[in-house]
Length: 274
Image (cartoon, rainbow, N blue to C red; front, side):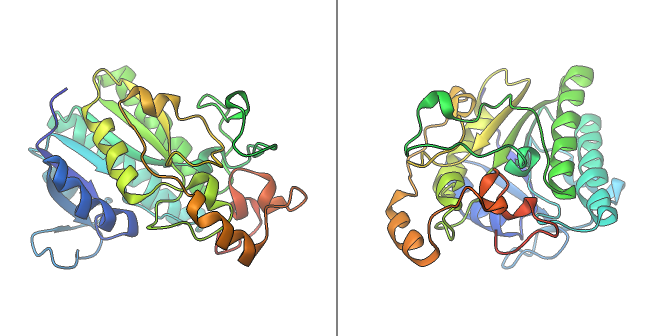
């Protein structure tokens, strides 16, 4: 499909939103920025809560597509997750349906499948050992549960209303990996922009779920569905591996925080940094 011209970027003041608002305009997008707090240097950004249905519908009106990054991105009490991540995402989808928006890119998370055991074996893994996209969802937190809900909501809005979504199970998108676990799930900001661009422009996505990471040597999951969209990752976390392993030690299979895809999110309570 042609590249959408105007894209609503929710969560534009957050870490990932800040990275994407710098990178996505190079692909020809005009970004409409939305967040719960003002976006630095962007006086025209929309400051609103996703709980405000009327404000959300106004923000959606006239855009060609939406990248939905807003919400709580760490574990929190269920009541807060419910309001921000579950009800807020519902309000956004309803506004998109009412205003005729045809494509949403939803920031899901690897924590929707966080209790999936991580692959064991040599690096790089045999392709048959990679975690497939259709692995059963096993959320590791209320946060992960909200991302599972978001994926189901996206499927419902496709089946019921024909609103297409690409749900991206993001690993960790930072300028560089900061932990040994992150060597396997890291997505460089440049690859993040490449993946979001592919998700916005691929044809006939219906509801497609993809893993979001770079082409890491230590990759744990299968990027086939992402590549099917036209995503061609260019980066690899391996240049950071020697330093991180020397500082932190390698992953230990007997450590519960190392045994599962979700890392420290599987701990109770989750341990930071993850």
